Length: 77
Image: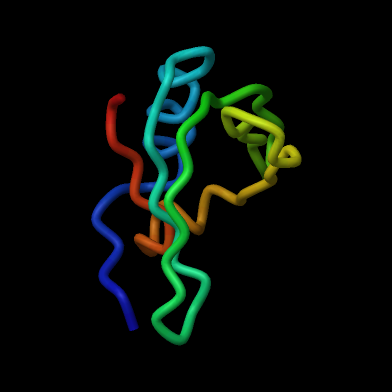
């Protein structure tokens, strides 16, 4: 099990600060499948947030727990 260092409210605030800013996401899809995407955080909802990748990729939806458990790592771009 992965360690959780921040609370859910802290994670939500950090995601809110990234809204509209270009970022690089590394998403762990399991079984050594890591997907790297560039784009920006589009919308923020109570349980999930949406990410708009650059290019023609479809809109992606992630939960805050993905960030807490480090299944998603966000880097400034």
